[in-house]
Image (cartoon, helix red, strand yellow):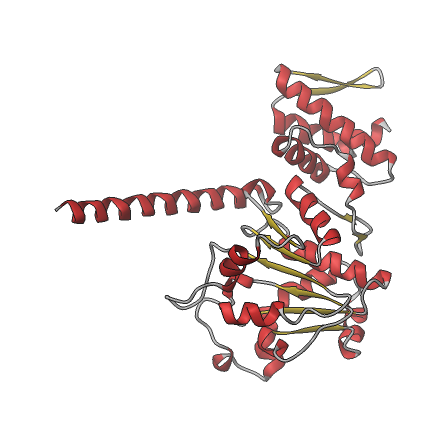
Length: 320
């Protein structure tokens, strides 16, 4: 097990040492960690987590080191077994798809226990990817008979009519992230066959009007760009034996000025309903390049400063 724990060329131990600023070495068939007490304790927990993953037959590498660090830093009481318990499905590269942060673990649990789940937070937190993975896993197990994936066709002011090509070509840029997520789980040829048989349907939000979606897993992505009317229309499509997941970032609304986001409105009016789960992601759940988290923090700080300056100007005007 020590060889697997250390990783190729000691890569796992090296990643742990760099992340925690500790000295990690192999001595007498054991791993020795030296450094500040708190950092050594964190290293111990990560190593125990890696051992649990290895015993379960999971491959481990620097990514798993990073995931466990994120777990324990976000939730000191976190148990590494949550990474195992919430595993969804094996991807095409045979790597398990599962949570990489406590927020993601809670999100997966919510999608398994609630008919309607909202996943809300910044880019890079896995909202869409995990929702697609859960939906595909449900389809493969026979829990649902089809998948319906949709997004509003609103992106930074562009409109479908001004894009080149036929309807399929116009829609493709909006729906490509959904296809990309599916492509990590199902071979492309199977996706194409499922699309032809309408077992998987990917369409703009406008195509949902007037339908009742039964025996389906329905995913609405980029929901912050829906209007209140569109969101109500979509949510009321829910039929028997179906589940819905709605994802979005309520800080990145591309609607025209003066239009209320359907996502923000739904989060407010549906929060008291017991069968509705709302999962909010934070920067600690970002699982893309580490720089993404710092970018999100920088923009958030800039927005706080902008609001402060606006409040100061208003106070000056009122005082004058």
